[in-house]
Each structure stands twice: as C-alpha cells, then as structure tokens.
Length: 266
Image (cartoon, rainbow, N blue to C red; front, side):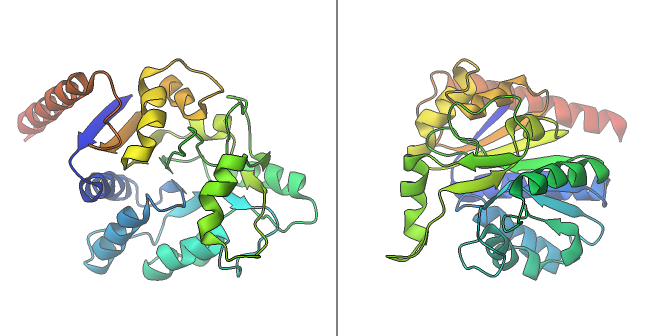
C-alpha cells in the first residue's frame, strides 16, 4: 500500500489526475472504476479541464461506477447516474454507452447485480479503480461487516451512512436505505486502486485502513491485501496516523527511484 500525504485536497486531486492521465495515455481503452460523493469532485474537475485542453481523452475508455441507490432511476437528481452525468460524463469525450452504473430499477435487482459482474468481466476487468472512503470505513456501499469476498449485490445501508447522506435529500423526500454495490471482492480484482481521503472526519477510518488489522469491521482495510493500492491523503485525513513521517520517507525514496530509472532510460 502506497500512502501519499499531501498538503491540501487540491493537491490530492492533482496527484490523482496525474494517475488517470498516465493510465489513459498508456492504455487509451482503459476500463475505469469510478466513485461518487464529494471527495472525487475536485478530481473530476481536473479531468474535465485536461480533456478540454486536449491533454487526455476518454473516447476509447469505459467506466463502471461502484454503486447506485436501489429504486432510483438515472433521471432522479439524487441518483448516482445523474451525479456522474453532471459531474463528469457530460463534460468529457466519452461515449454514454460506455459508462455503466448498476441498474437499480430492475424488476430483478439480484439478476441486475449478476449482470453487472458479467459486464465487468466482458470488458476485461477494471484497470484503475477510484475509491472514496466513508467515516465508518465503507468503500462503495460495502458497510462494516461486509464479506471481504463479496460480489456486486444488494446492500442495506447503515443508519450512519443514511444520516451522512441525508443532506442531499429534501425534507420529506424518499431516501433509499438499500443500494446495489460492487462487492469488496469485486473491487479487489481491479489491477490498480486509488483511494482518496480528505478532511479530519476521515482520519480515524484512514488510520484503520492503513495501520489497523484487516477486518470486516473496517471494509477498507481489505485494501491491504491488494498489491497495487495508492492512498492519497491531505494532511487532515492523515492526522491520526501513528507513523506519517515513515510514509513520507517511503514516498520520497520512491520518487527518487522513479527519477533515477527515468534518467537511466533516457
């Protein structure tokens, strides 16, 4: 697990944008796993800006989103399809038919979950998976005590997650308490994973993810089992780590090694 501690949320977004740019430059037809929520918004803004400047293209890429509220169709303002269209897809050169979000209005949501898994397999698997993290350590809508081997499925949201997301719904508006989400096992099959966390509220979950034991109580701790995870943190999100200087030292050495290899190759 590569832990990168940066000064600000903007620095986190810029670093993540560099990773996405390198991925699409190396493999224009990449399969990208995407996330919703407030944390990725700055990243999406930077990807839109880079696309507008001609620095990267999504024309040949495909995307799979982590999750969707069960019962909300893509025209609902609180659906994640609606969110992604407004936050990213409507502003980049991606084909709408290559952007996938779980079908949460299917008459048979369990079959829809199986079909989503099949679509990911048929696309060749996810090359780069973006994640945020909940204050309880959830990734996607995999709440605490989710199976670490779980697949895309229906998931009940915790009271904490419902309360955290209530600000997006108007008073009296129906707020779903179920979702369709990629499972932890599904997420761990991505070739590369990037987790973004900003703000002091995420610090305890970050600590449990990076320094704690691997446990279903903190779903994001399962990322310790993956060989290619980059955790991008601002100073506030890293504030509960016991060994931040150690991670900063490792990153400095990694950067120096990368520069040395690049110089030798040129």
